[in-house]
Length: 338
Ligand code: NAD
Ligand code: ISE
Image 1 (cartoon, helix red, strand yellow):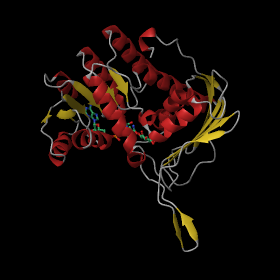
Image 2 (tube, helix red, strand yellow; image 1 turned 90 degrees about the horizontal axis):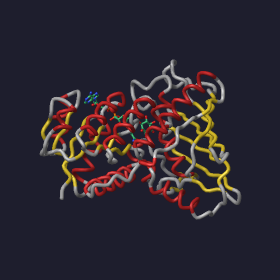
Image 3 (tube, protein in one colour; image 1 turned 135 degrees about the vertical axis):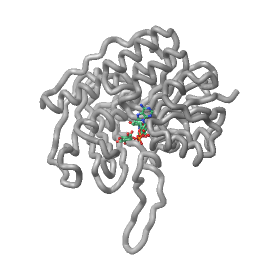
Image 4 (tube, helix red, strand yellow; image 1 turned 90 degrees about the vertical axis):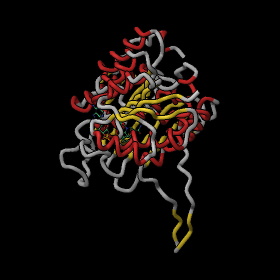
């Protein structure tokens, strides 16, 4: 069976995902698209050689009778409306992060999904599908370094990821990937957050605080430090080191040829999330297509999207209060037990 997909949002990542479904993955086909900018949607259909209809609105894509499942890759503030409409139509939906721009919005999605009585939502936290994070998790799961005590993490982008990247987006848009992948890695939840605002780089928009240091504590008492630096200039650099009782384990660096030349030893650093996580996106979507075709939903859930939103809200509060802020989560509903 071929899963027939409707895509809402044909911007940077929408186009990437349409390309991978059409040209790399198996078992799915994009049959319907929409974007706020219809010319762009038509251009994507033409450029990628799709046999797909361009609809005038996202809701029409969701309701199209030949669409089995949805991918929502429009701007973050539109996600809640489209995910709720997909749940209402009883159709599985893959939503890029953030699931919604507020924790309340994520909670409305959680409640609607539970009301529907069936898991329909997956959130685009692709790092869980990345080979290097999976290797790191295996090292922890097999108790190689003993119990984790401290995590030192780095999330650096060469420049602000978009023209509208402002205020607290380092916490609500960028570090959401750490907030998700670290609780998956540790199988733990956060209990408090503190945000430090170091000396600002001069190499970005003056109104932006960059970098940030985010300090999280978990239920088990693990201390996590995340450096977020979205204008680091030199490349796209994701690091994670776990300090355990008997040793340390670090995320493997992306493979690159090691060059010895002119009295220097060098290797490449990637510059974009598209390249750093290309394989992770492919695995994420192939697993989603396969599971959805079988009526299952196994990836990061609406509950995971909600927990991340509660965490980023606490970080925003901590940044502005200068205090250590609690992260208070209600108990996970049995509906989301794995
Ligand atoms: P983008 O601005 O390039 O594309 C967003 C598109 O959504 C635009 O084409 C815009 O016209 C369209 N749009 C806006 N409102 C709409 C509406 N109401 N209906 C239909 N289309 C609408 O942004 P992007 O970089 O592609 O990001 C899109 C989403 O993907 C964001 O939520 C972003 O956080 C997420 N993202 C995730 C990753 C990742 O690593 N997982 C990377 C980049 C972006
Ligand atoms: C972007 O939206 C992503 O999701 C990237 O993975 C992240 O590195 C970047 O900071 C975000 O803005």
